[in-house]
Each structure stands twice: as C-alpha cells, then as structure tokens.
Image 1 (tube, rainbow, N blue to C red):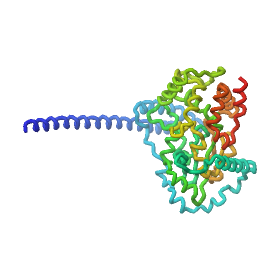
Image 2: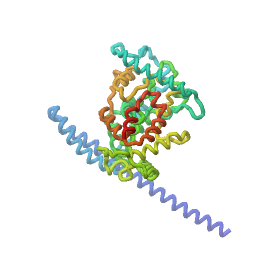
Image 3: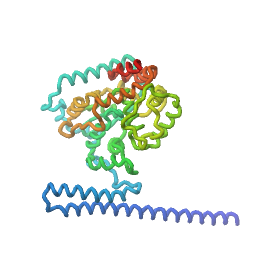
Image 4: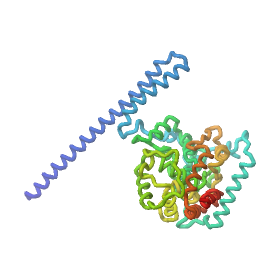
Length: 426
C-alpha cells in the first residue's frame, strides 16, 4: 500500500511539473505573437503617415517620394518582422473568401455566352489550328502504336499535378520546366492573388514563410482525384484542357542549371548533388564548358556534379518504373497521362505566344488576363546553352538518353539530330 501511495505522489509531482512547463510555453508563444502583430501594425501606420505627408504634393512628385520613403520604412520594419518563423500576414486563398464557384455549381450556371467560346472579334489563323490539330493527331497515333492508351495497373491517370479552375472550366497539367512559372502566374491571378501578395511570398526565398508559386496555387486549387479530373473534362459545358511541352533534353539542361547551379542552397538538392557526384565520380565531360551563371555560393556549390554525371544519374533512374521520379525530369507523356487524358490543346514552349493566346481565347479569358512569359531567356540563347551542355556527352550516353525519352521525342515531335551529330563529331 505504501508503495502505491509513493507512486501516486510521484506521478502527481511529475504531472504538475509538465503542466507548468506547458503554461510557460503558451505564455512565451503568445508574447512573441503579440510583438509580431505590433510590428506589423507599425508598418501599416507608417504607410498611412507617408501618404498623409505627401497628400498636398503634385501627383508625380507624391508618387515618387512616397515610393522612396515607403520602401525604406517598410523594408526596415519587415526586416524585424521576418526574423521570426511566422509570416508577416496569414495567407488565405482570395477566391475562398469570394464565393468561389464549385464544380457542381459550375455545371448548373448559365454558360450560354460561351457557346463557340472564341471571341467574335478574334480571328485565329489557320496555321495555328492546323498545327494544334496535327499535334493532337500525332500523339493519338503514337499512343496507339505503343499501346500506351490502354489503362492498366502500371499505366494510370496521374491527376496529381492537374490544376482545375472551375470558374472558367480551365484544366492544366503542370509540366515543370515547360513554361510552368508563366501558367502558374495565370492561375494565381485567376484565384484572386494580386501582384503584391505574389511578390511578397514568392520572392522572399530566404524567409521561413516563403511560398513558391505552386504552394500559393495549391491553397486555391486542391489536387483532384482521377474521378474528379475525368468528370470535369467530360462535362458540359465543355472544359478547355491543355498541357505545355518542351524538348526533353533541353528540359534536363534547364533543370540542371536552375536547381544545381542557380537556385538558393537547398538541403535536398545538395544531398542529391553529393550522391550523384559520389556514385559517378569517374565520369568526366568530353569537352570543357564553363557555365556563365556558375556561382559557388548557390545551387550545389562545391558539391556540384558535372553534367555528364547528372545525365548518367537520369539514365539509371528514369527506367525504374516503380521508382518515384523527380517531377522535373519524369517523361512528360507519363507525368500528364497524355495517352489517357483527352487534352484539347498540346502547346509548346517554342510556340507559346500563339498557343497561349489560343488557350486564353478558348477559355473565354482574353479580356480577363494576358499571358506574360516568365523565367524565359531568349529562345536562341537557351538552345545554344543546351547544345553546349549536351555536346559534352559521350556518343553512347546520348543514345541511351534519347532511348529514355523515346516516347516524349516521338509523341511531341522533337528532333535530336543536332545533339546526336555533335557527339559523333567529337
């Protein structure tokens, strides 16, 4: 009995200590949050003071002075705010606070104004229509040729990266490194985000509360199930569905330069770099090339594997059908289920101006938003850089790489003759 009493007393003491620790922790968090809110209020008050200070000045002068002072004040105050891991303000999807149309509501709303969908004031060229029709027909033939249009356990619809805007019945499969930033901006603006919010969250890459454009979009566009995706695409009024493709080999170069060289240091990328460099340490390029954007303080830094080592890693990993592939270099046909999903439009990065304009008009968005190409250098420069990288590969490695992306190359009609030739001539 005495032993039982002793155990109970000790248990009560431990519980009391635990309870006190929790109370102290809650008080400390609350104190920190209150300080956070006060600093944010300071920013807003000072913005109002600046506006009042210059309200009697001429408009051009007032705008100039306001911009300069506001920038310095807010930069100073936000510097203090962002020292904590909490965001400067709560991020909420704007469309969720604006009676966003659900799929069921969309099916029953009046869409008679969208009959025909194309604006009567916009004339699409026959060349664009012929080009898009030819692409779609070729994809259908290649899918049938290799029996890729037959659903199976290993060949299912991947609805994971689709974004569905129910208001405009617009369906997009987000192929990374294929104008994804451009279209993510379109979807975020359609969701109600303004440029200030997008810049605040997506440009402050060093902050704890940083949100990528994709993370912002997913606040508004939940990942659909396969059933929901197919239901939307088969619904009336008809949806406008599309995906954008890019030359598979040039897409790999873009990933390598963006993630391995240009991007801010990331522990996952660094880990991938170290592993690739260790496993393929003996592989070296056949010719020397120094990327003009190379910076030891960004990307993989000193752990940067050369491009030949990176491609060897790709060739080994992609054929592993059960392996979870990196979304930036998984074959496009597989990532977007191009043979299982009946897309209306197959756009290309090379012809994005005309293709993108057609997509917006088809969806009835020509007077709502304009397509601004983002994160894209001059096409000629991009191809020259891609050639500089790809021509480093040994002949056999180039052959193996093309075999890995065989379906993408044939399905989306991309040519690798120049890249093959330069590896033969070394």
